[in-house]
Image (cartoon, rainbow, N blue to C red; front, side):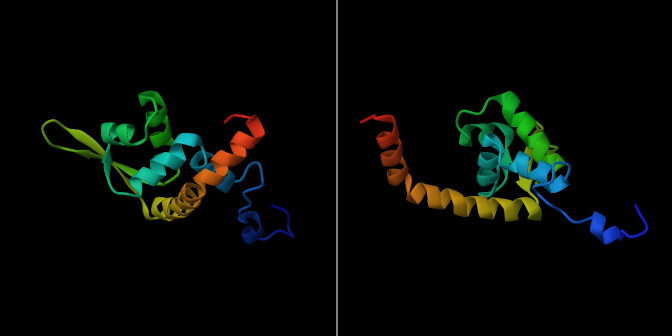
Length: 128
């Protein structure tokens, strides 16, 4: 830090900056599977296999990697429930719930305009 810089200047988050933590989290959250996982967990707690069924098409490996990334970023918690048989449950943190809420608004918008998107795709690909 130079003499003219204040600590607050170094802590400014900028999602456009390559090395910013917010950018790394943004990339994790906006990945294909993470967005869907966050939306699903916005509905409530899920066990691994139930979450895999809810997010159709995700492989076990990709779901595991996605959950690890989201847990690392503080978006969800992983709880081992001591029962017979033991199980693992995932739940959103307050940060993850806020992100999921905003993603839900985006998903609602896209679902409401699915017909428009379908027509635009058909026009551009010539498919009927």
